[in-house]
Length: 203
Image (cartoon, rainbow, N blue to C red):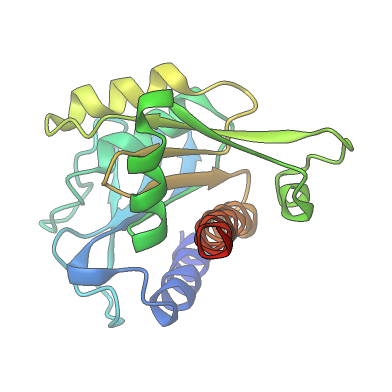
């Protein structure tokens, strides 16, 4: 478990340097075992810009802390559904202005699609006409229901899901891959919004 702790702590540090955890928002997890399913997940309410030995807690497949009084993130249930539905080993959830705006702009379509972008290769998509589709679900305050909604839109090709005005959850088969997917999504969101603004200015 020490190795998984180091990996997720390193990612937390990198994402924190990008200011992707405003107001203690966001949560991170990394799988520790498959059978039984256990994972390290962010502790609720922590300032993720600081590093302590209580940043993460081990939870079981029901999201309950194992041998600890620390309270896991309320959104642990979302990470667990990702692990149950995919081959993911790491799951990352952050709030940025860009991912919130994109989720609002395309919520009525239920997804945002990117193509003709070099960075979709970050998702292992090498076809010339390839595309990445990121589903968008409504922000349901009942977290088990929200987790179920996310589970329902995940396909084998899905690498991330947007929650309307509630950030993005991205995952991968390793901590490195999860971070790569998250970074690529955020780049695509930023590029798209910048391009929209540039086109509006040229009218």
